[in-house]
Image 1: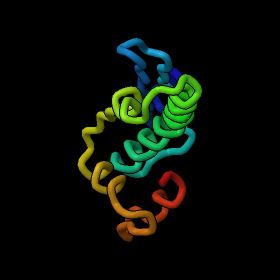
Image 2: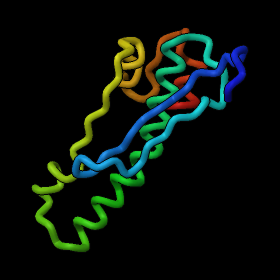
Image 3: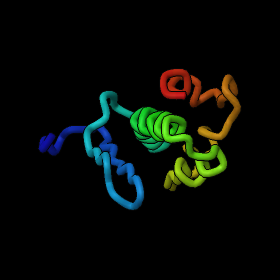
Length: 110
């Protein structure tokens, strides 16, 4: 936590619904990343794992309230901000495709 010799990366993200924060997280990652891309990919994976249940809940509510499915695109529109180009490229690869260097952590987080 406040140890200056700690080498774990910190992940942080905020999930907004209707411009109101409903989930905000800032914590040390469980593993020690060997590259910036790995740390960013780990953080992206952590954020998506927290976002998906909220997204599915919104779809469930939409179904229960009988909202037209065309409105779901606006209700469940998701914007993810990521600045690491390697992480972005890796996250957009088809499942099963990876680079030789990224193979060991894509399996864990993809």
